[in-house]
Image (cartoon, rainbow, N blue to C red; front, side):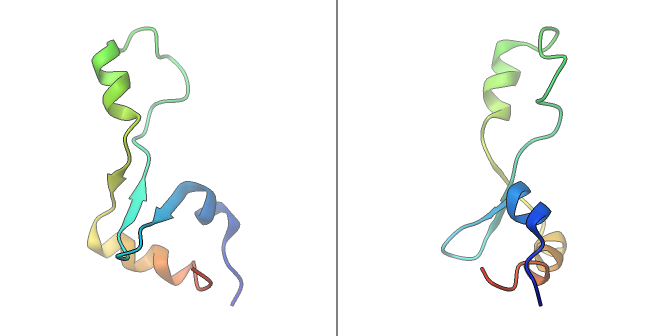
Length: 62
């Protein structure tokens, strides 16, 4: 099975097997958001266990 390239660009898998993603809403309309909100959104957040299972199926090579 081939790796889904769109998934590799959007998610990162840690060494322990956790799946990380970016917070949404950080591409445009940033002027109205506070600086604190923008800084917090730079961090990666964990994906839920159910979604992580689905994402890992789409990333067989990783």
